[in-house]
Amino acid sequence: MNTSSRFAYAVHVLALLSLQEGVPLSSEIIAGSVNTNPALIRRLLSMLAAAGLTTSQLGAGGGALLAREPKDIALVDVYRAVDDGKLIGLHRDTPNPDCMVGRHIQAVLVEVVDAAERALEASLASRTLADVTAGVLSAHRNEEQKRRRG
Image (cartoon, rainbow, N blue to C red; front, side):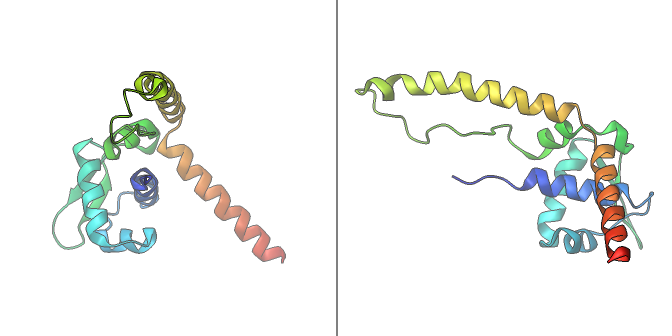
């Protein structure tokens, strides 16, 4: 019963790229910011590239770049690129069909989970990478102001 961090890592990667103003970043540099290994970042970048969210520049000084403007990247696109779309999993094994609850729980939960997933996707569709980046910059400015005062 694990939750995935891929979405959080992917948004982190994209926010970092959005602040680079077109300067490509290597998976090693990105991994340092995310605090994970470069192989995981390369897998994420591959998923993001397949979704048309990133591109790469080869050669010396090459690395990952955003494929679109941050305002044109909805967070739902990031979510769909890196997660399987299953916010809440159902039973791994079939519940006991001889039990009234076991026999009917899956059908009931499917409706509940589908509604929750639609709500999540609607919320993510209303936000962009530009919103995330603005939030990061705002938090950084607030931190700097507190540091200067204090």
